[in-house]
Each structure stands twice: as C-alpha cells, then as structure tokens.
Amino acid sequence: MSLEETNGYKNGSQFAEEVVGALENAGIDVMQPIALSFFLYLPNKDIAETVATLLRDESYDVDVDKSADDNSAQWLCWCNKTLTPNKETLKETGTLFLNLEKEHNGDFDGWETNPYV
Image 1 (cartoon, rainbow, N blue to C red):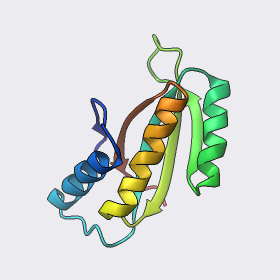
Image 2: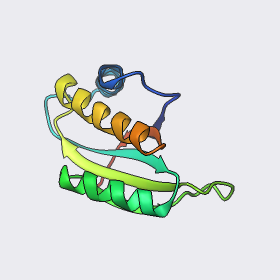
Image 3: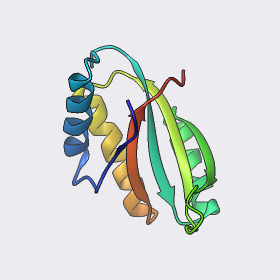
Image 4: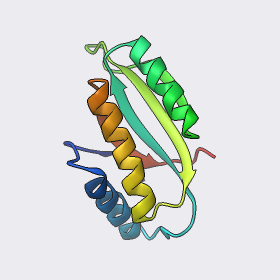
C-alpha cells in the first residue's frame, strides 16, 4: 500500500480503526504479521535522535534523516516494525506515536505497508 497520510488522529483508537480498515479493504489479513512503516517528523536532529532511541527500545527499526522537503527544518524518524495489525496492537502503536508527537512538538504524518523485513 502507498503512504496513507493523515490530517491528524484524535487518539490511538481512531488510528487503529483507520489502519485496520485500510488493510482489510486491501485484502490483508490483520491477524497475520505484516511489515509497516510509520512517519514521525520532529523539529530538529537532536530531538529526532532522542525519539529514535525511545522507539528502538520499543523494538522499532528507525532511520533518522533530514526531511525531503527542502523548505522544512524538520527531521524524519522513519520507523519500521513487523507486527500483527489487529485493533489492540494498532491502538497501542497509535497512542505511542501520538504521545511522542505531542511531547516533542512533532508531526505523526502517516503509515504504509512496507516490503521492509
């Protein structure tokens, strides 16, 4: 699936509903593990590196890089994890990213399925 961008999520439950719905509509079995990517933009490299460490402690593989938008000073934490995308797991995932977004003045910008394994 291509990148599913967001205009913002209210909470982890809303995130889970969106992701599960999109995966099911694409014919993906949400009871089987799948590789997913998540995109969290942060205001500077130091904050991005701090958040990357926190996410690695949660078993995410994370790459930190300057935003591809030439007009942006933001840094991207590109987060990858293989998980079973049921509603409970995705609620926890969404809550984690939304809390990091809020705590670090970031932007949780979307997700996608990923051939990354």
